[in-house]
Length: 341
Image (cartoon, rainbow, N blue to C red; front, side):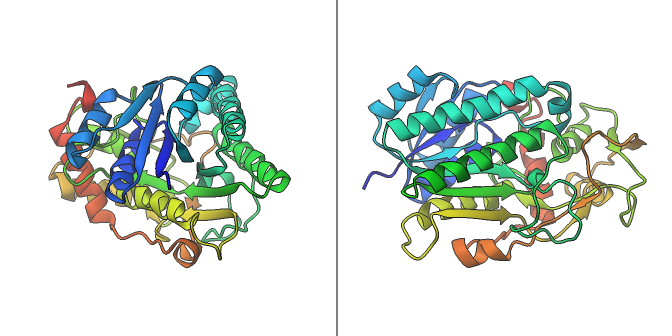
């Protein structure tokens, strides 16, 4: 059986960590990426960490001819679809770019898959599809809504995949709803390297700790949470990557549904200030911060009920807050300019 897995956006933060775990589990990742928010250096370091050459094609999922070329050259068994724009704030400012890149790109990819006889897909979705949840922790059967274009693009792609499956149940579709990925590979060789000012909390904290930024802007100090700052379920990127391996392995099980929706989180919420304190301990540096206005599209509290992932995939998060911060600091302190250095 071919174990070739097409990984769209495979040079990105979650993609590169997933490639390491795929190789270690005996899969062969075939990576496509357009480097809009990633670096080819990440793939060189994946090769360094695993001792295996990574098959790579540079191109865009919106380019149908490119996708056909790759799919016909490689015996692709399944697809992990990461490629997409992912900043909540930017999506509010640039909705058309998000809908074009995320939704149009996905439709072109799924058409190419169907026409090339590939019907197994793991989709990189997000807890943003739950909108502002009425109760916690968040279970997979909660009502879905979105508070920003990024979340809506994820929700729409989920709907498209559900419709594809209902039309042809030979497809095997797993929708993985991530909570907040943080951390880095324990080697410090691969990690999160945003192109611009980071949109996510931990890379921003890390850059303050390393001296690139003077202080952290904390968006909102008046939420209905223990310390007034937003509470999130942070999950180590290596745990998240292992969840994708489990999802691929689950395709081989006959007793599971061909359409699965699974939360990947820890079930534990931490506030922004909790994360600041934890990172101060890991880095040994003080993290200056200022409370500023709330950010459009943000919610107060969000954390998962991860029990279904354990039940259907045999997966659970193993790395705690200290490891998340230690590994992030190792990556950031060894690579203060990210992959650019």
